[in-house]
Image 1 (cartoon, rainbow, N blue to C red):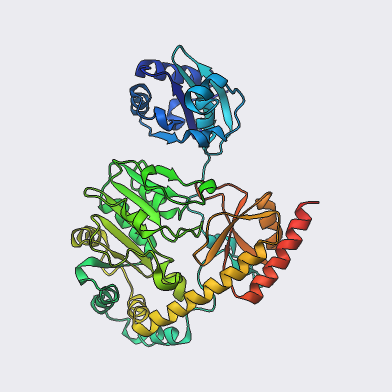
Image 2: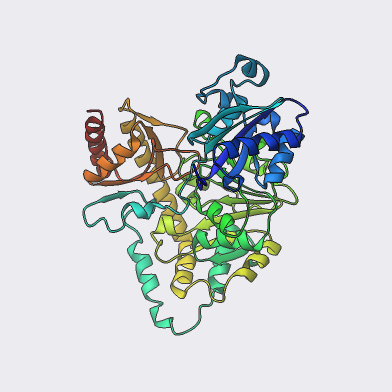
Length: 473
């Protein structure tokens, strides 16, 4: 068969007290027999109750990969070729090894193999394109394609902001001075300036966090914006995932995050699920010795910014990211900021290049946190809520479409069979929507739709009706 270069997940089960040597020997023999290599293994996977088994944990350490644990009820939902009632009675799932290998959505390469006290199975790891973003759905698409793939608010930036930015162009010969913008952001959140760092969008902030703060066990809560994990991996970190379940409405259970995780990243409201996690649940993740990164890039699209943590100073290790590109249509200008403890801000600032934020971006930042701009953003958030309700009502008319969770952001996540084909047909009908299968925890049946005005939504729903009819033929 030759060397196999596809990323692999090895599902492992074992009786209590199984040794490291037995687990390693079984895994190595299974891989070798299938012409696979241990270097391609990205993780061992098992049921939650087995994660702490010394033999399984020790084997993962020898292979240099993490152990992924899954609840028994989740594994029980995974179809497996070699179900065992004895295994179901003992663990709650009919095959720990096969279900754990397959739970991420890969393809089973080697079915269950046994030794005296252990079992294992091998599957491909479902690969997600962490660098795919919504703009890829519309770039080079030509005129006439309605963009529902990118979450930037339509008809922005407003004219007053365009004029404000244009007025600074005569100052471009001078180096940028971020003091006024930094002070304005600090005042907006009631914080001292030492707790504020201006960045070239939230994307730069993720890179700084990955490179400057250090972490032994970083964990990213998915499905969510993929750039944080990509930045951590690029910086050499081995990233663990906590994948929220559609069956739970993509709601966070703080207990699912490993106790010893020293860097945790989560979005609120989360892209792409549009779920708004309670601030109290996020606060439970904060503790001394841990950096808790909460991406609030879409929080200003939530009326009243309910559940926001920006401005909180009572939670140890809290790092809040904000973006000004979504609400104000400034994706091309790149402006965002970080709110954190002064010591964390100092580390991030030390990793930035000189003059990381341009003069026009600084002018925009100062303008967008002024009281009049905040009032305008709040009004826009209320309109989005009304428009989102109209979209959801229209989607509810389709038996083929499922909306999971309670949407609170400027976008809606839907599940539809043959989602990839529906997306292609919508594109042919003039609408670009965001594919969901590049987000860990989602597959090709998921699509993300940006919330737009009622007229645009009406046209989308007509196109969706047509796309579904064509797909069912």
